[in-house]
Length: 194
Image 1 (cartoon, rainbow, N blue to C red):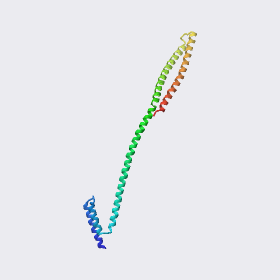
Image 2 (cartoon, one colour):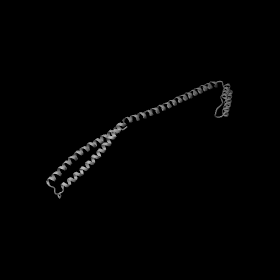
Image 3 (cartoon, rainbow, N blue to C red):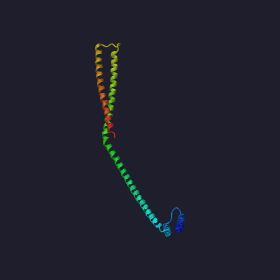
Image 4 (tube, one colour):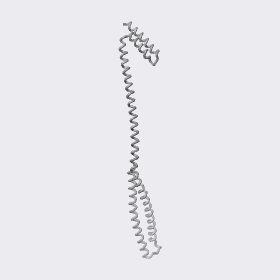
């Protein structure tokens, strides 16, 4: 029995030397088979270990092939999904632009209405400011004590001042309505902004 162990140790030593001589790349398949035959000849019980090794090596190679196949399948799926995503993004951009363009005429109409209303509001403000200056001047002339006016002239100027005050009140109401109209137009434009 000790003799068998010594012999197995010598064979293992030879195998180790052969493996070391072959380098880190391992043995060529023919050399490996020859070495396996030599080991089995020296230790027939080792054949079952080699069979198990061969079975496990084949199983590991199968796993590697399955992984490579799975990797290729997943990579192909990812490429297809990326292509689908790019097409979907382009479609959404196109549809979004089309949807925005559908409201463009309404936006343009509201913008034009806002521009016209703002211009009209500026004109009314200028008219009201001018009327305010006229009222102030007329009121100032009526309030001066050194100006001698006949009762008829004073009555006529007071009537004119009253009429101007009514016009000013009317313009103030129109201005308030116009400011509200401009505000609503701005809100409408804001609400349909995409």
